[in-house]
Image 1 (cartoon, rainbow, N blue to C red):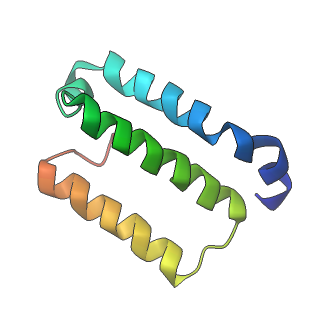
Image 2: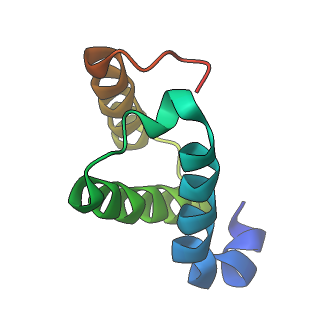
Image 3: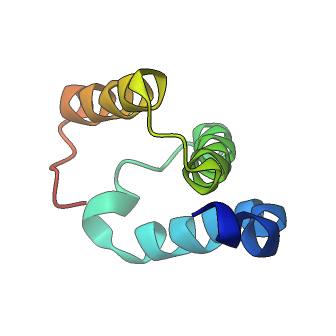
Length: 82
């Protein structure tokens, strides 16, 4: 992952944008993303997630962050398949 960091880290926002384009193309996930300000905030968080992934440090802090995301998804009823 660290070898990919240099090539991709500067494109994290673009990856997040494309990811959310995909989510908005699906009726199920689009229903969760109706608020533009929330979508903008989530895109920023997704870009940060890509950057963390590229750091290649998968320690307790990293996994706790992923767990918080999973709990948030569970709280709103977003199934794990998404």
